[in-house]
Image (cartoon, one colour):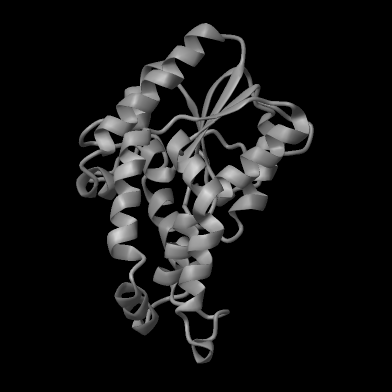
Length: 247
């Protein structure tokens, strides 16, 4: 999409691949083009507060367990994911910085009680020395390769005529349906209260994909005709990137 262009008022869903190393810049560009009046985010108030208080300490704990010979610039993707999980994700940082520069309100609308449960599991399992040692021993693809594969998967089911028969997050997370139902209610209420405003919600791409199975966030809001943007610049069902080819 070209500078100076914008889209009409309404709901816009931006699908991301979490931990995208270039996600901050991509999302900043998208927000600058869409020019939202309100931004919401797949992050809970509890998750936001937890990271504010504990992310630095927990990151230092993880890094202190990594031998210098391991080379901290070449960590396994799984360990990079763990570090990213306890720090503010690029989605939050991009939204925070954009909102501050444009005086745009933004809200974290995911479920806090789910975040509390995940943090407890994180502390008792993922952050143990044994788990960190195991992650260091993994031989896997680098994070950029993992992100690229996820975007390819997303692109394969992004267009309107394609559907994903089984969204992994719905199958693997017992709270996924509850979370999407909660966020859809929040977004629906905002759209009802502010019909002339452009509301942007940023979430993992699976929440925004076409699903043939249980309704995800997109399915629950489909009657509102939300416009969608996949953060991978080459793919968008509403062609916000006019030079995209092959989609």
